[in-house]
Length: 232
Image (cartoon, rainbow, N blue to C red; front, side, top):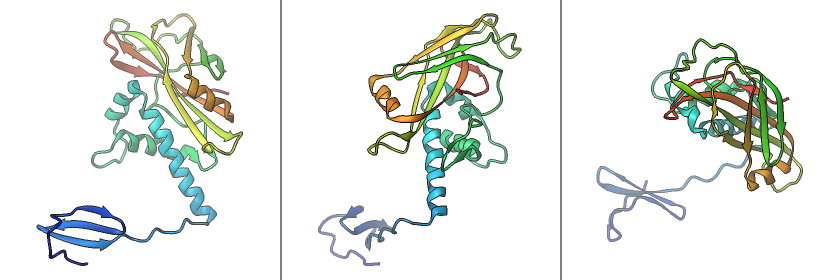
């Protein structure tokens, strides 16, 4: 490793061209940037890389929904050691449900089992997602004196592109407006898509939506969640 003796440029750190400058114990050193490795053509390696990348993208889509973040932050995976980010936790929870070819219906937006939310109708369109839920019924965990509203979290998974100029797989994340908590009547949620989201929606032939129902108090602090349910 060359040592920079003449310090007329000052103390350098970082990369310039193919040279990386480092500072150790007050002395500057220069090393050559490692040569890039050629992309593997092994189908097993490609499938593993695709699976890992897809899991990362799904985890980022889940974590982008603000009402879900506190649940993942407080979740401690079994056997975990040391600090883990939400992204790490979501990936660990869902990795077995992701393959290079797609995401199974068992993937989850929430860290553990929640109360049951059953859909009677789900409509996916390029401008609006509409979900009708059967009555939730009595849920012991929900405190109606504290929890005042429902919100519906959405991660929309798009794959099989129609054209060639878009990613093979794409995610859209969103959340509905609040709906007053009602445990005895059906509930209807609508989630509008932006113009850009609608354009992506139309670029894929296969679409799957993952949902989770979240309760919040008057200050928009989330308290409980349902199991994840999926569009047909």
